[in-house]
Amino acid sequence: MKKIWIGVLILIIAALAVSLIVTQTKKEPEEIKIGAIFALTGDAAMYGESAKNGLELAIEELNKKLLDKKITVVYEDNQGDPSKAVSSFQKLADVDKVKYIIGPLGTPEVLAVAPIAEKKKIIILTPTSSGPQLTQAGDYIFRNCMSDLIEGAALAEFVFKELKTRTAGILYINNDYGIGLRDAFKKRFDVLGGEILAEESFRRGDTDFRTQLLKIKFKNPRVLLLTGYAEMGRILKQARELGIEIQVVSTSNFEMPEILEIAGNAAENIYYTYQGFDIESEEEVVKKFTNSYRAKYNKDPDIFAALTYDAMKILAKAIERGGTDVENVKKELYGIKNFIGVTGKTSFDKNGDVIKPIGIKKVEDGKFIWVNKKFEFDFQGR
Image (tube, rainbow, N blue to C red; front, side, top):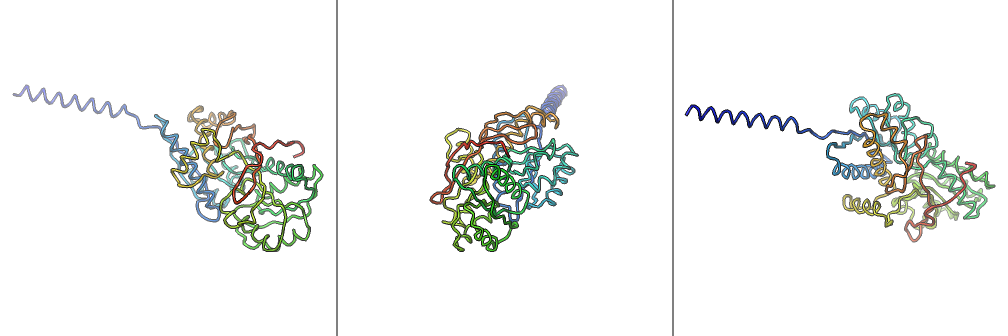
C-alpha cells in the first residue's frame, strides 16, 4: 500500500513539473506600446474622435494578425493646445515609456513637441499636420498628409488656370495651418500673374466674421480662399446673409459634414483640394476599411480617420521590419515607398514628408464629389 502511495506521489510531482515547464515556456505576446496625442475634448474634439476611431480600427486589425506581439495604445488629450501637447508628450515619454507617438493632429502642437522628440529620440508620426515648418522639424518627425506648400500651390494653379481667375481674397484662420496655406497660395498665385486684393484672418472659436467679410466684399476679388475648421460653415452662412456672391475655394479640411449642416446651400459649388481618400473607391483596401468602419462606428469615415488608420499601418510596417530599436524603425520609415493604404500610395522623402497625389473636389447638391482625382500641376515656383 505504501508503495502505491509513493507511486501516486511521484506521478503528482511529475505532473506538476510538466505543468510548470509548460507555463514557463508559454510566453506572453510582446507588447508594443504606442502613444497617441489627439484633441479628445474642446473645439477640435470632432477631429480627435475621428482620428481615434481610425487608429483603434487599425490596431484591432493588426492585433488579429500578430501572433507574438500585441499593440496597445495610451491616449493623451491635448485639447488642440500646444502647451497641453507638450505635457501630454512628456507624460507618454517619461511615465509610459513609449517610443512611438501617433499625433498630434495640428501643426502648432507638433511644432511644440518636435524639439523634445528629437532630444529624447522618440518617433512622431502625425496623420494630419500640414504646416510647411514640419519639413525641417527634425529627424524623428514624419507626417503622412501633404504639406500646405503643395495644397496651396495646387489650389493657386486651379484658380488661375481652371477657374481662369486673376484676382483673389484670402480669409484664413490665424495659426500655423492657416498662415502656411495663405503664404503658399499667395506665392504661387503671384508667380502665375494673379493678384491678392484682400487678406483677413480670424481666431479659432470665433463666431462673428461679418467685419472681415465686409472688408473682402469691398475689395471685390473674384475668388476667396477660405481656410479653417468647422468655423467655415458659419463663415459661408454669414457671407450669404450679407449678400456676398463670390466663388469660394478651400482645402482638405473642408470635407466635413458639419460644415454642410451649418452652411446649407451656401456651401454649394465650392471647390477644394483633397488628399487621396475616396470613400466610393472600388479598390479592395478602401472598401474593406470603409465597410469595417461603418460596421464598428455606424457612420462613414472621414479624411482624419483614414489618414490616422494609414499612419498606424505604416508605423506597424516599419516596426515589423525594424524590430524594437527606434533607430532601425526610423530608418525603415524613411524607406517606405508606395505603401498602399486607404489614402492612396504613400512614400516618405528625406525630410519625412509624404509624397502622394492630390485631387480636386466640390460640393454639388449637398454632396462632396470629385472633379479631378489626380490634379496635375507645375511644382516649380512654390
